Amino acid sequence: MISTFLTISFLATIGSVVAQVGPAAVNLGTAGNYAILAETGITCVPTCVIVGNIGISPASSTFITGLSLILDSSGKFSTSSQVTGEVFAANYAAPTPATLTVAIHDMQTAYTDAMGRTPPNFLNLGSGAIGGLILTPGLYHWNSGVTISSDVTLAGGANDTWIFQVTGTLTMANAVHMTLTGGAVPKNIVWAVAGAVTIGTTSLFQGVILGKTGITLETGATANSRLLAQTAVALQKATVNN
Image (cartoon, helix red, strand yellow):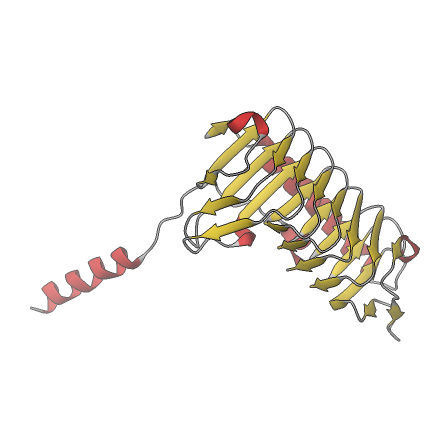
């Protein structure tokens, strides 16, 4: 009787485990400690709303504009009324510069990992025009730019993963929404983009952007997760929710 009970309990436990669908998760390392991380600049046309830490390196804090930074007495970070978190820059007191150097390296490594995954489950889907589609978990690759001209849905569970490899630019039109269904979460969605990323006015974007170049959120746009750019991030009265 006891053996039967234990067997049933064990099987019930196995049955409660939900398997991941999609590629292995991309390890962001310490870059995952930032809502925004950039190498050359972070700009804001006020008022912006940033939930999470932001960091810049090797550029200094003078390349963070529009946030009215207030340097902490420790000299290690700044604060801003537009940032729910702390602001770090390469010219701040130790250990901030070394910490940022590691985070930038981790960001670059994550981009290389995400962009280098093979083979794709979906190749050149929609010839790069993905507006109106329902995207299931998997590895996507485009030998071109990607445009999102109308609402798009990512459908999957809370443990499922998506990696989008975009060798050109990524452009989301104005007033377009990216919707998550089935319990999908932004942290499990990675967009590795070689070209510039532009999120149009009042649009809603979901997922981690690993940008080889710049990332721009136009007026009233919202991004849920992280903006990690190997050049600059520009916000125009936009919101970033980590």
